[in-house]
Image (cartoon, rainbow, N blue to C red; front, side, top):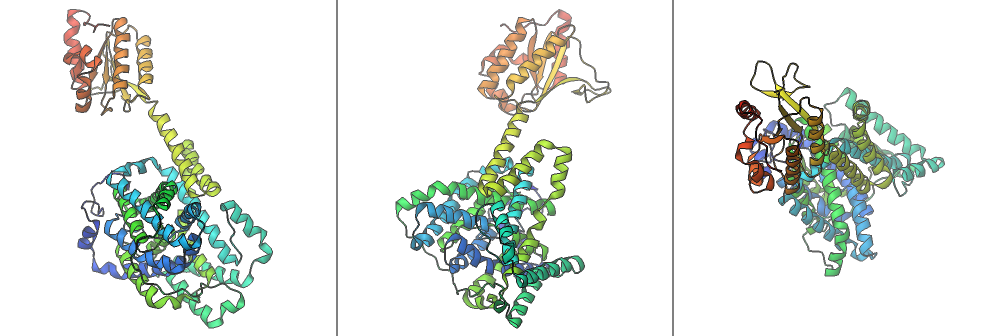
Length: 577
Protein backbone atom coordinates (compact mmCIF):
# COMPACT_ATOMS: atom_id res chain seq x y z
CA UNK A 1 0.00 0.00 0.00
CA UNK A 2 1.13 3.51 -0.72
CA UNK A 3 -0.05 5.80 2.01
CA UNK A 4 0.02 9.52 2.52
CA UNK A 5 0.19 9.01 6.26
CA UNK A 6 2.27 6.75 8.39
CA UNK A 7 0.61 3.45 9.30
CA UNK A 8 1.63 0.23 11.00
CA UNK A 9 3.27 -2.89 9.69
CA UNK A 10 6.52 -4.75 10.18
CA UNK A 11 7.84 -3.72 6.82
CA UNK A 12 7.04 -0.07 7.12
CA UNK A 13 10.14 1.73 8.21
CA UNK A 14 8.62 5.17 8.47
CA UNK A 15 7.90 4.96 12.17
CA UNK A 16 11.11 6.59 13.37
CA UNK A 17 12.96 9.73 12.43
CA UNK A 18 15.58 7.60 10.69
CA UNK A 19 14.01 4.81 8.63
CA UNK A 20 17.50 3.43 8.02
CA UNK A 21 17.73 2.46 11.70
CA UNK A 22 14.61 0.32 11.45
CA UNK A 23 15.67 -1.76 8.47
CA UNK A 24 19.23 -2.18 9.73
CA UNK A 25 17.93 -3.45 13.06
CA UNK A 26 15.69 -6.05 11.38
CA UNK A 27 17.95 -6.90 8.44
CA UNK A 28 18.57 -10.63 7.97
CA UNK A 29 22.04 -11.66 6.89
CA UNK A 30 20.65 -14.40 4.68
CA UNK A 31 19.29 -11.60 2.44
CA UNK A 32 22.75 -10.23 1.72
CA UNK A 33 23.46 -12.60 -1.18
CA UNK A 34 20.32 -11.73 -3.15
CA UNK A 35 20.61 -8.06 -2.27
CA UNK A 36 24.18 -8.06 -3.55
CA UNK A 37 23.07 -9.61 -6.83
CA UNK A 38 20.34 -6.99 -7.06
CA UNK A 39 22.94 -4.29 -6.38
CA UNK A 40 25.22 -5.71 -9.07
CA UNK A 41 22.34 -5.64 -11.53
CA UNK A 42 21.46 -2.05 -10.63
CA UNK A 43 25.14 -1.08 -10.78
CA UNK A 44 25.52 -2.65 -14.21
CA UNK A 45 22.67 -0.47 -15.47
CA UNK A 46 23.60 2.69 -13.58
CA UNK A 47 27.14 2.96 -14.89
CA UNK A 48 26.44 3.01 -18.64
CA UNK A 49 23.18 4.91 -18.21
CA UNK A 50 25.04 7.60 -16.29
CA UNK A 51 26.95 8.31 -19.47
CA UNK A 52 23.80 8.46 -21.60
CA UNK A 53 21.77 10.60 -19.21
CA UNK A 54 24.66 12.98 -18.58
CA UNK A 55 24.73 13.62 -22.32
CA UNK A 56 20.99 14.27 -22.31
CA UNK A 57 21.36 16.64 -19.36
CA UNK A 58 24.17 18.48 -21.12
CA UNK A 59 26.92 17.75 -18.59
CA UNK A 60 30.10 15.60 -18.76
CA UNK A 61 29.69 11.89 -17.87
CA UNK A 62 31.78 12.18 -14.73
CA UNK A 63 29.21 14.51 -13.19
CA UNK A 64 26.65 11.71 -13.22
CA UNK A 65 29.15 9.55 -11.31
CA UNK A 66 29.67 12.37 -8.83
CA UNK A 67 26.00 12.48 -7.90
CA UNK A 68 24.95 8.82 -8.22
CA UNK A 69 26.42 7.27 -5.03
CA UNK A 70 25.55 10.15 -2.69
CA UNK A 71 21.98 10.25 -4.03
CA UNK A 72 21.59 6.52 -3.37
CA UNK A 73 22.89 6.85 0.18
CA UNK A 74 20.73 9.90 0.92
CA UNK A 75 17.64 7.97 -0.10
CA UNK A 76 18.70 4.99 2.02
CA UNK A 77 18.88 7.30 5.05
CA UNK A 78 15.42 8.83 4.61
CA UNK A 79 13.40 6.77 2.12
CA UNK A 80 10.66 4.30 2.99
CA UNK A 81 10.68 2.00 -0.04
CA UNK A 82 12.60 -1.27 0.03
CA UNK A 83 12.87 -1.40 -3.74
CA UNK A 84 13.27 2.10 -5.14
CA UNK A 85 16.62 2.82 -6.81
CA UNK A 86 17.28 6.52 -7.33
CA UNK A 87 19.61 8.14 -9.81
CA UNK A 88 19.72 9.86 -13.17
CA UNK A 89 16.69 9.07 -15.32
CA UNK A 90 15.64 10.09 -18.81
CA UNK A 91 12.78 12.23 -17.47
CA UNK A 92 14.98 13.98 -14.91
CA UNK A 93 17.75 14.53 -17.46
CA UNK A 94 15.40 15.95 -20.09
CA UNK A 95 13.71 18.30 -17.59
CA UNK A 96 17.08 19.40 -16.23
CA UNK A 97 18.44 20.16 -19.69
CA UNK A 98 15.31 22.09 -20.70
CA UNK A 99 15.24 24.14 -17.49
CA UNK A 100 18.94 24.95 -17.66
CA UNK A 101 18.70 25.89 -21.35
CA UNK A 102 15.98 28.43 -20.51
CA UNK A 103 18.40 30.12 -18.12
CA UNK A 104 21.60 30.05 -20.18
CA UNK A 105 22.89 28.46 -23.35
CA UNK A 106 26.50 28.65 -22.18
CA UNK A 107 27.92 25.09 -21.96
CA UNK A 108 30.44 26.31 -19.40
CA UNK A 109 27.59 27.12 -17.00
CA UNK A 110 25.65 23.90 -17.61
CA UNK A 111 27.34 21.93 -14.82
CA UNK A 112 26.83 24.61 -12.17
CA UNK A 113 23.25 25.37 -13.26
CA UNK A 114 22.35 21.67 -13.34
CA UNK A 115 23.72 21.19 -9.83
CA UNK A 116 21.91 24.30 -8.60
CA UNK A 117 18.63 23.05 -10.09
CA UNK A 118 19.03 19.74 -8.25
CA UNK A 119 19.62 21.61 -4.98
CA UNK A 120 16.64 23.93 -5.53
CA UNK A 121 14.25 21.13 -6.50
CA UNK A 122 15.50 19.08 -3.56
CA UNK A 123 14.93 21.95 -1.15
CA UNK A 124 11.35 22.35 -2.43
CA UNK A 125 10.70 18.64 -1.84
CA UNK A 126 12.23 18.70 1.65
CA UNK A 127 10.11 21.69 2.67
CA UNK A 128 7.01 20.08 1.17
CA UNK A 129 7.71 16.82 3.00
CA UNK A 130 8.29 18.56 6.34
CA UNK A 131 5.08 20.54 5.78
CA UNK A 132 3.22 17.22 5.45
CA UNK A 133 2.19 17.90 1.86
CA UNK A 134 2.48 14.23 1.01
CA UNK A 135 -1.33 14.14 0.99
CA UNK A 136 -1.01 15.61 -2.51
CA UNK A 137 -0.06 12.09 -3.53
CA UNK A 138 -3.63 11.07 -2.70
CA UNK A 139 -4.73 13.06 -5.73
CA UNK A 140 -2.48 10.90 -7.90
CA UNK A 141 -5.21 8.32 -8.24
CA UNK A 142 -4.35 4.70 -8.95
CA UNK A 143 -5.69 4.89 -12.54
CA UNK A 144 -3.64 8.04 -13.15
CA UNK A 145 -0.52 6.27 -11.88
CA UNK A 146 -1.25 3.17 -13.99
CA UNK A 147 -1.53 5.34 -17.09
CA UNK A 148 1.48 7.47 -16.14
CA UNK A 149 3.72 4.44 -15.58
CA UNK A 150 2.42 2.80 -18.76
CA UNK A 151 3.25 5.89 -20.78
CA UNK A 152 6.60 6.31 -19.06
CA UNK A 153 7.49 2.67 -19.84
CA UNK A 154 6.55 3.11 -23.51
CA UNK A 155 8.63 6.29 -23.65
CA UNK A 156 11.62 4.46 -22.21
CA UNK A 157 11.10 1.51 -24.57
CA UNK A 158 11.00 3.64 -27.72
CA UNK A 159 14.23 5.32 -26.63
CA UNK A 160 15.88 1.95 -26.12
CA UNK A 161 14.61 0.62 -29.45
CA UNK A 162 16.93 3.08 -31.17
CA UNK A 163 19.86 1.32 -29.51
CA UNK A 164 18.55 -2.11 -30.53
CA UNK A 165 17.99 -1.04 -34.15
CA UNK A 166 21.27 0.84 -34.45
CA UNK A 167 19.81 4.18 -35.58
CA UNK A 168 19.52 7.66 -34.01
CA UNK A 169 16.58 7.96 -31.63
CA UNK A 170 15.60 11.47 -32.64
CA UNK A 171 13.88 14.05 -30.48
CA UNK A 172 10.38 14.93 -29.45
CA UNK A 173 7.56 12.91 -27.94
CA UNK A 174 6.91 9.18 -28.18
CA UNK A 175 5.28 9.41 -31.58
CA UNK A 176 8.04 11.62 -33.01
CA UNK A 177 10.63 9.11 -31.88
CA UNK A 178 8.64 6.13 -33.16
CA UNK A 179 8.21 7.83 -36.55
CA UNK A 180 11.94 8.58 -36.64
CA UNK A 181 12.68 4.88 -36.15
CA UNK A 182 10.29 3.92 -38.95
CA UNK A 183 11.63 6.59 -41.32
CA UNK A 184 15.12 5.18 -40.87
CA UNK A 185 14.08 1.57 -41.48
CA UNK A 186 16.52 1.37 -44.39
CA UNK A 187 19.31 2.26 -41.98
CA UNK A 188 18.52 -0.38 -39.40
CA UNK A 189 21.75 -2.20 -38.64
CA UNK A 190 21.49 -5.97 -39.03
CA UNK A 191 24.31 -6.92 -36.68
CA UNK A 192 23.06 -4.53 -34.02
CA UNK A 193 19.54 -5.97 -34.32
CA UNK A 194 20.95 -9.50 -34.05
CA UNK A 195 22.82 -8.59 -30.87
CA UNK A 196 19.75 -6.89 -29.37
CA UNK A 197 17.44 -9.76 -30.35
CA UNK A 198 19.85 -12.30 -28.88
CA UNK A 199 19.96 -10.32 -25.63
CA UNK A 200 16.15 -10.13 -25.50
CA UNK A 201 15.81 -13.85 -26.21
CA UNK A 202 18.37 -14.69 -23.52
CA UNK A 203 16.64 -12.46 -20.98
CA UNK A 204 13.22 -13.97 -21.61
CA UNK A 205 14.63 -17.51 -21.65
CA UNK A 206 16.49 -17.05 -18.37
CA UNK A 207 13.45 -15.49 -16.71
CA UNK A 208 11.25 -18.30 -18.00
CA UNK A 209 13.44 -21.32 -17.33
CA UNK A 210 15.93 -20.20 -14.65
CA UNK A 211 14.12 -17.42 -12.76
CA UNK A 212 16.45 -17.55 -9.77
CA UNK A 213 19.46 -16.45 -11.77
CA UNK A 214 20.15 -12.70 -12.23
CA UNK A 215 19.23 -12.60 -15.91
CA UNK A 216 20.11 -8.93 -16.51
CA UNK A 217 23.55 -9.26 -14.95
CA UNK A 218 24.36 -12.50 -16.78
CA UNK A 219 23.32 -11.08 -20.15
CA UNK A 220 25.28 -7.90 -19.53
CA UNK A 221 28.46 -9.82 -18.66
CA UNK A 222 27.98 -12.09 -21.66
CA UNK A 223 27.46 -9.08 -23.91
CA UNK A 224 30.69 -7.47 -22.76
CA UNK A 225 32.59 -10.75 -23.18
CA UNK A 226 31.27 -11.39 -26.70
CA UNK A 227 31.85 -7.78 -27.71
CA UNK A 228 35.47 -7.90 -26.55
CA UNK A 229 36.06 -11.31 -28.17
CA UNK A 230 34.75 -10.51 -31.66
CA UNK A 231 35.24 -6.73 -31.69
CA UNK A 232 31.59 -5.85 -32.20
CA UNK A 233 32.60 -2.22 -32.43
CA UNK A 234 34.46 -3.02 -35.65
CA UNK A 235 31.26 -4.59 -37.03
CA UNK A 236 29.27 -1.38 -36.61
CA UNK A 237 27.70 -2.17 -33.26
CA UNK A 238 27.73 0.83 -30.95
CA UNK A 239 29.36 0.29 -27.58
CA UNK A 240 29.35 2.44 -24.48
CA UNK A 241 32.95 3.49 -25.05
CA UNK A 242 35.40 5.11 -22.69
CA UNK A 243 33.99 6.45 -19.42
CA UNK A 244 36.24 8.94 -17.57
CA UNK A 245 37.22 8.10 -13.99
CA UNK A 246 35.39 10.16 -11.37
CA UNK A 247 35.51 10.52 -7.58
CA UNK A 248 32.76 12.68 -5.99
CA UNK A 249 33.89 15.87 -4.28
CA UNK A 250 31.53 18.41 -2.74
CA UNK A 251 31.20 21.96 -4.00
CA UNK A 252 28.60 24.73 -4.09
CA UNK A 253 27.40 25.83 -7.55
CA UNK A 254 29.23 29.00 -8.61
CA UNK A 255 26.34 30.93 -10.17
CA UNK A 256 24.89 34.38 -9.62
CA UNK A 257 21.82 35.23 -7.55
CA UNK A 258 19.96 36.12 -10.74
CA UNK A 259 20.65 32.63 -12.11
CA UNK A 260 19.23 31.07 -8.93
CA UNK A 261 16.10 33.17 -9.33
CA UNK A 262 15.82 32.28 -13.02
CA UNK A 263 15.95 28.57 -12.16
CA UNK A 264 12.91 28.91 -9.90
CA UNK A 265 10.60 29.03 -12.92
CA UNK A 266 11.26 25.36 -13.65
CA UNK A 267 12.12 24.17 -10.15
CA UNK A 268 8.58 23.38 -9.03
CA UNK A 269 7.78 21.46 -12.20
CA UNK A 270 10.97 19.44 -11.84
CA UNK A 271 10.17 18.74 -8.18
CA UNK A 272 6.65 17.59 -9.08
CA UNK A 273 7.84 15.16 -11.76
CA UNK A 274 10.61 13.81 -9.52
CA UNK A 275 8.16 13.13 -6.71
CA UNK A 276 5.42 11.75 -8.96
CA UNK A 277 7.80 9.47 -10.84
CA UNK A 278 9.49 8.21 -7.67
CA UNK A 279 6.36 7.85 -5.57
CA UNK A 280 4.44 6.05 -8.30
CA UNK A 281 7.25 3.50 -8.71
CA UNK A 282 7.69 3.06 -4.94
CA UNK A 283 3.93 2.71 -4.53
CA UNK A 284 3.70 0.09 -7.24
CA UNK A 285 6.33 -2.10 -5.54
CA UNK A 286 4.70 -1.50 -2.14
CA UNK A 287 1.35 -2.75 -3.39
CA UNK A 288 2.90 -5.82 -4.99
CA UNK A 289 4.84 -6.79 -1.85
CA UNK A 290 2.40 -5.77 0.87
CA UNK A 291 4.55 -2.86 2.07
CA UNK A 292 3.74 0.74 2.91
CA UNK A 293 5.48 3.89 1.78
CA UNK A 294 4.96 7.23 3.49
CA UNK A 295 4.34 10.08 1.04
CA UNK A 296 5.65 12.82 3.36
CA UNK A 297 8.89 10.96 3.95
CA UNK A 298 9.22 10.06 0.29
CA UNK A 299 9.03 13.75 -0.58
CA UNK A 300 11.72 14.61 1.94
CA UNK A 301 13.86 11.62 0.95
CA UNK A 302 13.82 12.53 -2.75
CA UNK A 303 14.60 16.09 -1.74
CA UNK A 304 17.60 14.92 0.27
CA UNK A 305 18.78 12.77 -2.65
CA UNK A 306 18.64 15.75 -5.02
CA UNK A 307 20.33 18.15 -2.62
CA UNK A 308 23.12 15.59 -2.12
CA UNK A 309 23.49 15.08 -5.88
CA UNK A 310 23.64 18.84 -6.46
CA UNK A 311 26.16 19.51 -3.71
CA UNK A 312 28.41 16.84 -5.27
CA UNK A 313 28.18 18.46 -8.75
CA UNK A 314 25.59 16.07 -10.12
CA UNK A 315 22.20 16.87 -11.64
CA UNK A 316 18.55 16.10 -10.91
CA UNK A 317 17.83 12.51 -9.85
CA UNK A 318 14.60 10.56 -9.54
CA UNK A 319 13.35 7.06 -8.88
CA UNK A 320 14.33 4.78 -11.75
CA UNK A 321 11.68 2.40 -13.05
CA UNK A 322 14.12 0.28 -15.05
CA UNK A 323 16.80 -0.11 -12.35
CA UNK A 324 14.28 -0.69 -9.58
CA UNK A 325 12.52 -3.35 -11.65
CA UNK A 326 15.79 -5.02 -12.68
CA UNK A 327 17.12 -5.10 -9.11
CA UNK A 328 13.84 -6.49 -7.79
CA UNK A 329 13.74 -9.13 -10.55
CA UNK A 330 17.26 -10.17 -9.55
CA UNK A 331 16.20 -10.78 -5.95
CA UNK A 332 17.03 -7.45 -4.28
CA UNK A 333 14.51 -6.54 -1.61
CA UNK A 334 15.96 -4.03 0.84
CA UNK A 335 17.82 -0.69 0.99
CA UNK A 336 21.01 -2.78 1.20
CA UNK A 337 20.74 -2.95 -2.60
CA UNK A 338 21.22 0.82 -2.85
CA UNK A 339 23.94 0.78 -0.20
CA UNK A 340 26.01 -1.87 -1.99
CA UNK A 341 25.30 -0.25 -5.37
CA UNK A 342 26.60 3.09 -4.05
CA UNK A 343 29.83 1.45 -2.92
CA UNK A 344 30.20 -0.28 -6.28
CA UNK A 345 29.69 2.99 -8.14
CA UNK A 346 32.32 4.71 -6.01
CA UNK A 347 34.81 1.94 -6.81
CA UNK A 348 33.78 1.97 -10.46
CA UNK A 349 34.14 5.70 -10.82
CA UNK A 350 37.62 5.57 -9.35
CA UNK A 351 38.99 2.39 -10.92
CA UNK A 352 36.66 0.26 -13.07
CA UNK A 353 35.11 2.40 -15.78
CA UNK A 354 37.24 0.69 -18.48
CA UNK A 355 35.29 -2.57 -17.85
CA UNK A 356 32.25 -1.07 -19.57
CA UNK A 357 34.04 0.17 -22.65
CA UNK A 358 32.97 -2.87 -24.72
CA UNK A 359 29.37 -3.04 -23.48
CA UNK A 360 27.13 -3.15 -26.59
CA UNK A 361 24.41 -0.51 -26.61
CA UNK A 362 21.76 -2.98 -27.93
CA UNK A 363 22.41 -5.25 -24.93
CA UNK A 364 21.91 -2.31 -22.59
CA UNK A 365 18.73 -1.38 -24.47
CA UNK A 366 17.37 -4.94 -24.24
CA UNK A 367 17.96 -5.07 -20.49
CA UNK A 368 16.10 -1.81 -19.95
CA UNK A 369 13.18 -2.88 -22.20
CA UNK A 370 12.70 -6.15 -20.31
CA UNK A 371 13.01 -4.38 -16.97
CA UNK A 372 10.25 -1.83 -17.62
CA UNK A 373 7.78 -4.14 -19.34
CA UNK A 374 6.18 -4.91 -15.96
CA UNK A 375 4.79 -1.37 -15.99
CA UNK A 376 2.72 -2.13 -19.09
CA UNK A 377 -0.45 -2.98 -17.17
CA UNK A 378 -2.68 -3.97 -20.06
CA UNK A 379 -4.85 -6.14 -17.82
CA UNK A 380 -5.48 -3.20 -15.49
CA UNK A 381 -6.58 -0.99 -18.38
CA UNK A 382 -8.92 -3.73 -19.56
CA UNK A 383 -10.38 -4.04 -16.06
CA UNK A 384 -11.02 -0.30 -15.88
CA UNK A 385 -12.58 -0.40 -19.34
CA UNK A 386 -14.99 -3.18 -18.36
CA UNK A 387 -15.91 -1.99 -14.87
CA UNK A 388 -15.09 1.71 -14.44
CA UNK A 389 -15.12 3.86 -17.58
CA UNK A 390 -14.47 7.19 -15.77
CA UNK A 391 -11.29 5.83 -14.22
CA UNK A 392 -10.33 4.25 -17.53
CA UNK A 393 -10.56 7.77 -18.95
CA UNK A 394 -8.16 8.97 -16.24
CA UNK A 395 -5.66 6.18 -16.99
CA UNK A 396 -5.94 6.67 -20.75
CA UNK A 397 -5.54 10.44 -20.38
CA UNK A 398 -2.39 9.98 -18.33
CA UNK A 399 -1.01 7.46 -20.83
CA UNK A 400 -1.75 9.54 -23.93
CA UNK A 401 -0.69 12.74 -22.17
CA UNK A 402 2.73 11.29 -21.39
CA UNK A 403 3.15 10.00 -24.94
CA UNK A 404 2.05 13.21 -26.63
CA UNK A 405 3.13 15.96 -24.24
CA UNK A 406 5.91 14.23 -22.25
CA UNK A 407 5.98 13.36 -18.57
CA UNK A 408 5.21 16.63 -16.80
CA UNK A 409 2.27 17.79 -18.97
CA UNK A 410 0.88 14.27 -19.10
CA UNK A 411 1.01 13.98 -15.33
CA UNK A 412 -0.59 17.38 -14.81
CA UNK A 413 -3.42 16.53 -17.21
CA UNK A 414 -4.08 13.25 -15.40
CA UNK A 415 -4.02 14.94 -11.98
CA UNK A 416 -6.41 17.63 -13.24
CA UNK A 417 -8.84 15.01 -14.56
CA UNK A 418 -8.59 13.05 -11.29
CA UNK A 419 -9.45 16.22 -9.36
CA UNK A 420 -12.41 16.92 -11.63
CA UNK A 421 -13.77 13.41 -11.03
CA UNK A 422 -13.12 13.69 -7.30
CA UNK A 423 -14.92 17.03 -7.06
CA UNK A 424 -17.78 15.73 -9.19
CA UNK A 425 -18.23 12.68 -6.95
CA UNK A 426 -17.81 14.63 -3.71
CA UNK A 427 -20.33 17.25 -4.83
CA UNK A 428 -23.04 14.62 -5.36
CA UNK A 429 -23.24 12.63 -2.12
CA UNK A 430 -26.02 10.08 -1.91
CA UNK A 431 -28.68 11.01 0.60
CA UNK A 432 -29.96 7.97 2.49
CA UNK A 433 -33.26 7.67 4.37
CA UNK A 434 -32.79 5.68 7.58
CA UNK A 435 -35.07 3.18 9.24
CA UNK A 436 -34.84 0.84 12.22
CA UNK A 437 -33.19 -2.48 11.39
CA UNK A 438 -35.40 -5.40 12.55
CA UNK A 439 -34.23 -7.09 15.74
CA UNK A 440 -31.74 -4.35 16.61
CA UNK A 441 -31.58 -0.85 18.05
CA UNK A 442 -29.65 0.39 15.02
CA UNK A 443 -30.80 2.48 12.09
CA UNK A 444 -29.65 1.91 8.53
CA UNK A 445 -30.35 2.85 4.93
CA UNK A 446 -33.83 1.53 4.07
CA UNK A 447 -32.58 0.65 0.56
CA UNK A 448 -29.74 -1.47 1.94
CA UNK A 449 -31.56 -2.98 4.93
CA UNK A 450 -34.60 -5.13 3.95
CA UNK A 451 -37.39 -4.69 6.45
CA UNK A 452 -36.03 -1.48 7.97
CA UNK A 453 -38.96 0.62 9.22
CA UNK A 454 -39.27 4.39 9.35
CA UNK A 455 -40.80 6.33 12.24
CA UNK A 456 -44.12 8.04 11.43
CA UNK A 457 -43.74 11.81 11.47
CA UNK A 458 -39.93 11.58 11.55
CA UNK A 459 -37.58 11.75 8.55
CA UNK A 460 -34.09 10.41 9.30
CA UNK A 461 -31.59 11.52 6.65
CA UNK A 462 -27.90 10.69 6.27
CA UNK A 463 -25.66 12.25 3.60
CA UNK A 464 -23.23 9.50 2.57
CA UNK A 465 -20.24 11.79 2.38
CA UNK A 466 -18.68 14.74 4.15
CA UNK A 467 -20.56 18.01 3.72
CA UNK A 468 -18.69 21.02 2.40
CA UNK A 469 -19.51 24.18 0.48
CA UNK A 470 -19.53 22.27 -2.83
CA UNK A 471 -22.28 19.78 -1.95
CA UNK A 472 -24.38 21.22 0.86
CA UNK A 473 -26.73 22.87 -1.65
CA UNK A 474 -27.45 19.45 -3.16
CA UNK A 475 -28.22 18.13 0.31
CA UNK A 476 -30.73 20.94 0.84
CA UNK A 477 -32.40 20.07 -2.44
CA UNK A 478 -32.49 16.35 -1.59
CA UNK A 479 -34.05 16.99 1.86
CA UNK A 480 -36.60 19.35 0.33
CA UNK A 481 -37.63 16.69 -2.18
CA UNK A 482 -37.83 13.98 0.49
CA UNK A 483 -40.04 16.18 2.65
CA UNK A 484 -42.28 17.00 -0.31
CA UNK A 485 -42.61 13.30 -1.23
CA UNK A 486 -43.49 12.24 2.34
CA UNK A 487 -47.13 11.48 3.05
CA UNK A 488 -48.01 12.72 5.57
CA UNK A 489 -45.33 15.47 5.75
CA UNK A 490 -42.78 14.88 8.52
CA UNK A 491 -42.93 16.86 11.73
CA UNK A 492 -39.18 16.61 12.26
CA UNK A 493 -36.11 16.02 10.09
CA UNK A 494 -33.05 14.53 11.77
CA UNK A 495 -29.82 15.01 9.85
CA UNK A 496 -27.19 12.37 10.64
CA UNK A 497 -23.77 14.05 10.25
CA UNK A 498 -21.66 10.98 10.98
CA UNK A 499 -19.64 11.45 7.75
CA UNK A 500 -18.80 15.12 8.39
CA UNK A 501 -15.82 15.74 10.64
CA UNK A 502 -15.64 19.49 9.98
CA UNK A 503 -18.15 22.06 8.81
CA UNK A 504 -17.13 25.50 7.62
CA UNK A 505 -19.15 28.68 7.96
CA UNK A 506 -20.68 28.36 4.43
CA UNK A 507 -21.93 24.85 5.21
CA UNK A 508 -23.37 25.89 8.58
CA UNK A 509 -25.08 28.86 6.95
CA UNK A 510 -26.59 26.59 4.29
CA UNK A 511 -27.91 24.20 6.95
CA UNK A 512 -29.42 27.17 8.77
CA UNK A 513 -31.19 28.14 5.54
CA UNK A 514 -32.52 24.57 5.42
CA UNK A 515 -33.76 24.96 9.02
CA UNK A 516 -35.61 28.14 8.07
CA UNK A 517 -37.18 26.53 5.00
CA UNK A 518 -38.37 23.55 7.04
CA UNK A 519 -39.71 25.79 9.79
CA UNK A 520 -41.94 27.58 7.30
CA UNK A 521 -43.66 24.25 6.62
CA UNK A 522 -44.00 23.47 10.33
CA UNK A 523 -41.11 20.98 10.35
CA UNK A 524 -38.24 21.07 12.84
CA UNK A 525 -34.58 20.31 12.05
CA UNK A 526 -32.50 18.25 14.47
CA UNK A 527 -28.95 16.93 14.20
CA UNK A 528 -27.41 13.59 15.22
CA UNK A 529 -23.95 12.04 15.39
CA UNK A 530 -22.24 15.43 15.47
CA UNK A 531 -18.47 15.12 15.81
CA UNK A 532 -16.67 17.22 18.46
CA UNK A 533 -15.03 19.57 15.93
CA UNK A 534 -18.42 20.18 14.31
CA UNK A 535 -20.03 20.81 17.73
CA UNK A 536 -17.34 23.39 18.45
CA UNK A 537 -18.04 25.20 15.18
CA UNK A 538 -21.79 24.79 15.59
CA UNK A 539 -22.12 26.40 19.03
CA UNK A 540 -21.43 30.06 18.06
CA UNK A 541 -23.14 29.83 14.65
CA UNK A 542 -26.65 31.06 13.77
CA UNK A 543 -27.68 27.43 13.28
CA UNK A 544 -26.37 26.35 16.68
CA UNK A 545 -28.03 29.23 18.52
CA UNK A 546 -31.35 28.58 16.77
CA UNK A 547 -31.30 24.83 17.41
CA UNK A 548 -30.12 24.84 21.00
CA UNK A 549 -28.60 21.82 22.77
CA UNK A 550 -31.88 19.86 22.84
CA UNK A 551 -31.88 19.56 19.04
CA UNK A 552 -28.38 18.02 18.84
CA UNK A 553 -28.29 14.29 19.67
CA UNK A 554 -25.46 11.89 20.34
CA UNK A 555 -27.01 9.14 18.19
CA UNK A 556 -29.89 8.49 15.84
CA UNK A 557 -31.52 6.31 18.50
CA UNK A 558 -31.37 9.26 20.93
CA UNK A 559 -32.97 11.51 18.30
CA UNK A 560 -35.78 9.00 17.78
CA UNK A 561 -36.32 8.69 21.54
CA UNK A 562 -36.48 12.49 21.88
CA UNK A 563 -39.06 12.67 19.08
CA UNK A 564 -41.23 10.04 20.74
CA UNK A 565 -41.03 11.88 24.07
CA UNK A 566 -42.21 15.06 22.37
CA UNK A 567 -44.88 13.45 20.17
CA UNK A 568 -47.51 12.66 22.90
CA UNK A 569 -47.71 16.36 23.75
CA UNK A 570 -48.67 17.30 20.23
CA UNK A 571 -46.60 18.58 17.36
CA UNK A 572 -43.04 19.25 18.59
CA UNK A 573 -42.06 22.90 18.77
CA UNK A 574 -40.46 24.28 15.61
CA UNK A 575 -37.45 26.57 15.84
CA UNK A 576 -38.40 30.07 14.81
CA UNK A 577 -37.81 31.21 11.26
